[in-house]
Image (tube, rainbow, N blue to C red; front, side, top):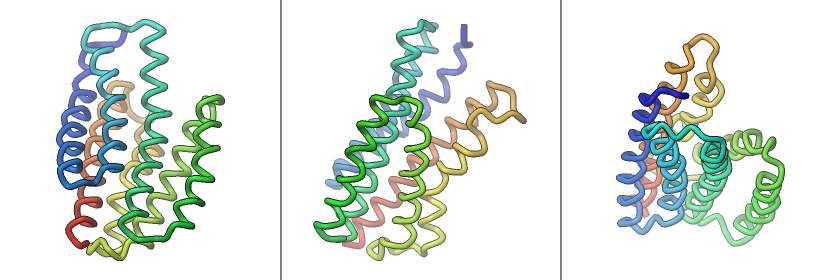
Length: 194
């Protein structure tokens, strides 16, 4: 059984997700808000799972699914939101949809691809944020850093061998919460400049 304290960092993500999603929705940044809701949903599953000691196979599988698959869809939504704000044109939205659709289906039916696809979309999000968002008044490296927090998190802290499992868990989830705040900053900065 996983210790109850694992729920603490899940609750942190959930609180940040609730606040940022609501704030984005008020600003009419709908795709960004929905993307954040998906990350918050994964945290809600974790908070219930660990907080109430419900460590059964079905809930574990659902938590993993919502975290990985929902995270991928959340990233697709973040990219859609940036593309809308950047006025990239209809053809780029269609190209993104033509690539994202099959990737989402692949992730749905082949779970082993989810983390890889998440990392690919995350890298795309970082590149798009840094290079194709003139409507965001921040400098390119700052935009890349805000968008890339999660990339470093996944590559360095997720299941880090140099940390105990509990330390790795809490560090990873704390950085996820910080990244959601960074996403909020990127998307609201975009809206303020339009």
